[in-house]
Image (cartoon, rainbow, N blue to C red; front, top):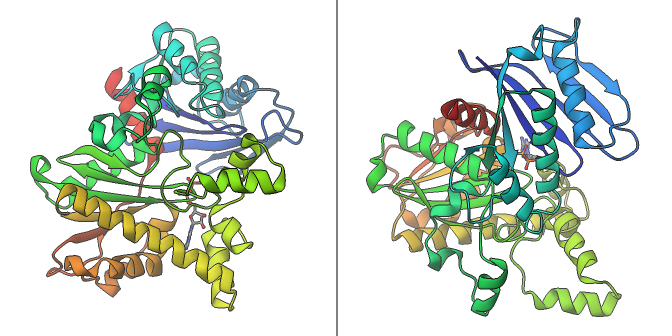
Length: 396
Ligand code: ADP
């Protein structure tokens, strides 16, 4: 059985066709610059040369159509007909407080995705177009919505309520929702299995450190707290996002520079984080190189980044009154051994000891703490596409 996974971003569409019999990726690719000049599809199929199509893509609908065409292309494709696709799993950014699990798309689901346009203005409209394009192109096939917010719906009120007048929660559902839920769910479940923890008596902290980054505190297998909020802007310092900040900073800069609130949020989302602090790049490798070469701002950016992760680990340990395991995942978490070591050293008061040899390994699930470490520390590679495909299969 083959499942297509679609992940529509604001101007991009990532996809994978996965054979669920052995969970092998048959083909994957990316449509870039959708609705912008210079749109391009890059399609990769195992054992074949990359296939690049440069053609205008007015909307995500055109992109979906091009993806299906590439999948059945006589030379570059991997299936003879789109009928071979059993179902489509869609990553959907925001499910509000309605969905705590993945769901087969029907009119109600589409209405909720539409009602959440305000909460996910860049992603939810694209997600809905992607779903409707698949409905049109693959009639009779099920579409499943896998929400980035769903895993976090088990948070208690004390974790998700903001300390602002209650009327805003009642009128507009202003609260913390959390994101990267598919990854936090996949990684925390795997951590419990891999480390042999008792699910019903477990305290796990997942550090999803990619370009976007968030932590979650997972108590007895369920999300108890997470660092992203109403939108993905809250929490950790990220590639281009500021994370936590005194809201008065926004007013101050806006007044001094004559900027409106939308411009300020654009700065906080796209021009801040390690990019803004270092002035070098949003890529941790570039900033790390600059820091090694003596760039003070780059060094401070990385120090501040680690400092914030350490503070959140401390906070979540206190919030759960203990921690059994700390897991690193995503681009930085999976690849940057020095970062893992320094963050772990920052919470060594918990009795954590890192095994330097194990910590050097890459690309595999591995325990990186020593056997006598009081808290287990591990790397578990995330795989959001596979998680979406499994959720889709489970609903068929
Ligand atoms: P996202 O899905 O949020 O775009 P990823 O999880 O793919 O992000 O992570 C991308 C980030 O991972 C990049 O910013 C890159 O700097 C970082 N990264 C990848 N490899 C390394 C490495 N070897 N050392 C440090 N950072 C790395």
